Length: 383
Ligand code: SIN
Ligand code: CO
Image (cartoon, rainbow, N blue to C red; front, side, top):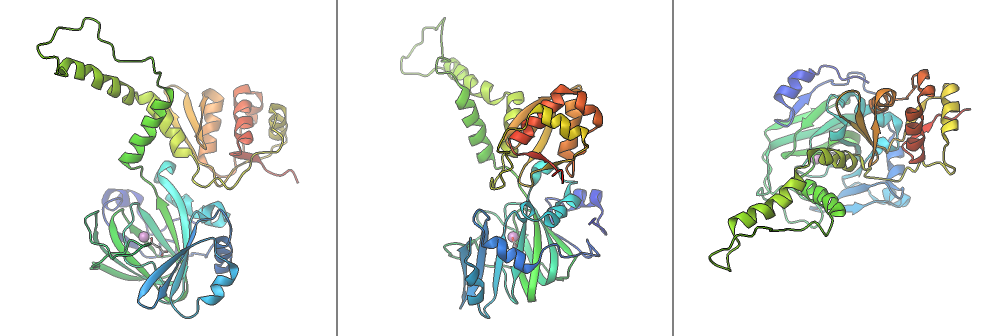
């Protein structure tokens, strides 16, 4: 499915991260990729993150999944909604919904959350930390959007939900299947099902917080810091007051910290690993017996395609010349020449049909074997 009635350069210039925007008929011939029953089934599975939000008198309540199958029959006439995270990892047709949004780099894309709501169901007015494209899949939903919020915006007291106290909408639209609403981080929004059988697909993005970056990068540095690497002061100047921590000492101390933090190359390598570490590691594709390099050659000679584990994350960082670092599920692989080409091919997604020449490239064979053995790739079934 391709995006239509959507101008990518204009969107990036005017809307991305700036303002909510409604796109009518973004997918004019939208076919709903998942049945409501299939979504309910996923919400009952262990290892799938889901939430049920329902109206209980005046109050919205939340229950975390996995849900018991019998739970749905007890919901009755009160409005309710079910939200399931990372459905793209379980339903290939839902994963295909990400493809049209890859004008934003993969490392910024998080997952596709799918919601189902009965008439009047919704999660209440709120704001999120991330950009989202809300694609209407089935039925109708009324979306109201409001101003940008921040951590000073008043919230209603609630133990589970961060609902806005005073929501003053600036836009109000009813979305039909194939219509899409873009909401940047921080903007208030509230979607309510109009009629039963309302399904919404949220293509969600991620943006690391400064806190997470500092925490992760400094943990990485600490894991390799050597305790013998200490402050030293040969040529210590005599100082007037023994109680003073001299400016020159502080400069040296500060430099010890900033020099490590500023290692751009090591940072890039750490970030690639950090960013590609899977959030949900429930799809274990690791083979029972390790795949050998001979088996990789045989698979390639037979013309078998390679597939990416839908839960896997891939990215690369160019290193000058034809060299790059390939990141797959938190591991870094150095590649150049033919194996770098292969790495880019893997990062492009879809079924991977390596160039037949790859059979004669030992580095590329080693790379494929390693990726298969860590469960990031697998050959298609021979039968
Ligand atoms: C949301 O606004 O984040 C929830 C989307 C939905 O109800 O589908
Ligand atoms: Co939201």
